Length: 260
Image 1 (cartoon, one colour):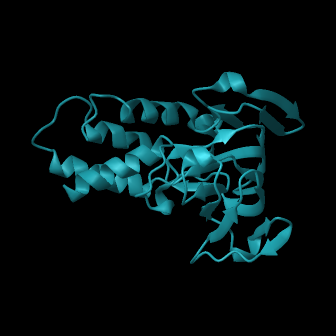
Image 2: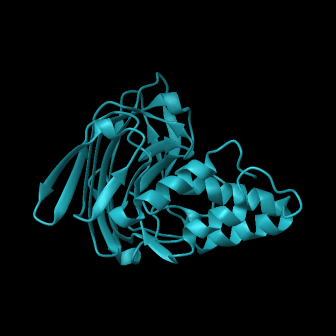
């Protein structure tokens, strides 16, 4: 049972599903995210959000500017947890809250605050992170599942799925996550959003909502921009040569016939 739970959790992360039980090392590299830990999600509104990232080599230099407003009729006591995956180091993460610099502590990456009705709080985060994504954990979980289910083979076979990963140990990935959410699960309304992703020319985007993105070219760089207020999460940027395997992986993982 424990092996099945581990495998299911890792697989969900591969297709961009956010899980509060997931270990960060199994998550796709992404923008810094703000996770609201207390209060009703409908009490909060993202008045403004600007997210930018420049991906070069194995690094992503990203910035996130967010204004969160209390739209309820009562004061709200809450806290924000920063989700910053694969940072180059604490010195490569900078945080400002209402214009004041705040030290990033990876052992307790959060900030408590109180907002009166109609009041706002501003967060600015810049970070250099890695875009290298290890598929070892996924491969290990799948093989454990294969051993456990070897006597009950039906539908998609796990060994067929693992072959998708045999040609690489690491891949470069970058995902647009929810940016601001309640507990990492529930959406928060956005009033204004601007997302810009600059990637090497050999990168492409895989997204179920590609129509909300505008693409332009500048030298050896592709730039993707979106001002959509929703459905921007789960857009994944990766080298074009990895695109088909990535899509096939998603199709297998989301199939009802896949053995979980």
